Image (cartoon, rainbow, N blue to C red):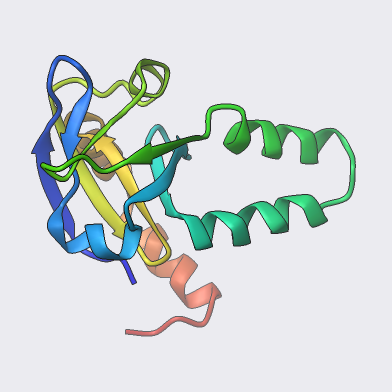
Length: 142
């Protein structure tokens, strides 16, 4: 299970070191794709296959095609190099507005990659009271 938060820098070529805590669970080859809320998602191959199977099961309609397009159109396999880095393709760097400082966020079955400043803005927008209400609605207690 992916959890925790780690900060790294992305170089001018778009290479970034994957946190060592995530490398084993991600494997040597995994998928990076456009995520939600302005981030990228990293999926281990097994989780990616499970996710795409769920996408295949959806009924064929306009909403399904939008969902499939969101995740599949920019999905790419990436490989870890000897230094534990991956190359984030330019298209995905632009999509997530990755500048210099990035944050990896563990999200159970996947990892999110955020531009540090964008994540900070996202966190500022979060309303803790609304989050507590949502948790109560979902019957999640702490």
